[in-house]
Length: 387
Image (cartoon, rainbow, N blue to C red; front, top):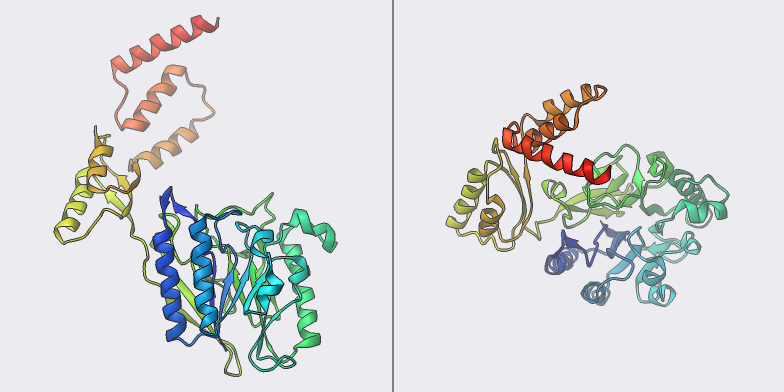
């Protein structure tokens, strides 16, 4: 059996407010091409099919059309709910849909309801157990375990290992989970935190005994161990994510051991971080246009290194990059200044000194006499008004 591990489609999500429906549709079309070219038997989505509990109509249509195309070609689809999904809505009608080859696992009662792949009903080649996102505060009491993701997943894996050993001991054991697993520090700002009081991190040892753990939640591809892996999201949803190439993972159970192969994904959206002085960044845009690039849909973060803020910088950038998402001023001396300020934090400073430091921090230049005079006047008026 050839199984394609994906996760975190986040259908319906925007990129800082910019619609991503076309990019998501492009990914789904590419997915169908890969499935056909690689002779895939099943597609696995490890959580966060949608970006929110009530997805927009375009997101529902994209999912429906893609799943229909997969099922029509004889490919089965396995999906679990992530922390962004509504387990009730995503799982509605799941038992009926199961007969059609769409296997959705969203509830506690689904934990020991594996998807059988290859072989026969009594002796499958592989079994996939889908673990939906389980909020410890809601399920720990039912499981009789500690209120942490580690304890909840450990309990669930005990149930799965027991069920697998009793019913399908000769089949490859594959689990899909949506969690933050041990030692991975490459989370990005687009991932919704599932941490409450430091209890979100799960050790990879929880998945001991499995032949493969298909993980979702972290958007950047990464391998915790050889058999515990994040496919990552197919699209970047932050500028930091865009710096890491995207992938899907192909599992093959045809040999004596399960093998894993990475399949690189092309970029479905143009996301760039440009760093330099204002003129350098603008020149980058001019050069790209001269080379025939269309920048109208390019999502840009500009990090400007000018020693002082330049008047009208935002407007000039937007003329060159219509989809400018954010602009920040980067002061090379800032880290040292911040460290010095922190070291002096215990020394009491006057309001005037605080204001002067703020002006210096923001503009890169010391506050002038007029700035200080206006501050003194405003502070005096405030004190008189509140006395």
